[in-house]
Image (tube, rainbow, N blue to C red):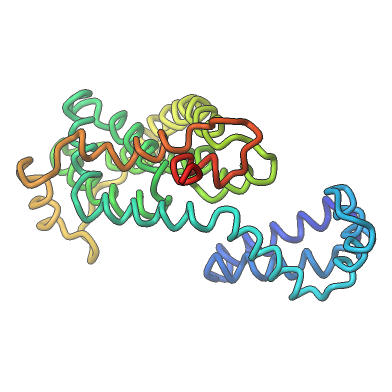
Length: 285
């Protein structure tokens, strides 16, 4: 019962089962998983973990004696303190890109570069780079109507476009800050955030390539026709596809929300705190 792998498996089962099976909100599922893990973890393991982090013995013992709810609340606050500001800024950037049409300009520029027949590659790459400053679900909400509009234009490959969007967004949010997961890894392992962004981007380009080949296979095996839906009617999609370029910002301006965070997060000194690495200009004020 106290084996770490068993405790981890229980936590994963509660989170995944809660989200998929019970249709719980992810926050509630994660909270239940945290309670289960905290309940199963013995006090001796908590004390040993604190000692391994350099905590003095008295503080480590006090931590082990804290209640489950207090420990979860404390660690939740510590995590928010490390990555909360960056996540909030990423949400603001995503909303700005959605409202201004900058994201759509990036998509159209990609399509001009690759051509209509290579639209899946454009969607794959665009969703990956759009997934760097914005959240996974934001990329989906943004690009799914565009995938339907593109399917109307070319008359095929709806599943291929959808899977390309999913592959690009999932890999960006799994590997490249300021997504929550990579940001947490940056804080825990003391990795310079700029290095994490560069390394995650390089690895992500390989992983999305594998996702693209799977999408090609799945599209041939399970072709899915485009259907009308309440959230994206085909008539509305035709209007989106016919929108004129002059109503969108320029490509240079559209890329700024992606480029500025990348430049500001470039590491200056490997030993600098995460907050100073992410905001080098502010740290000098």
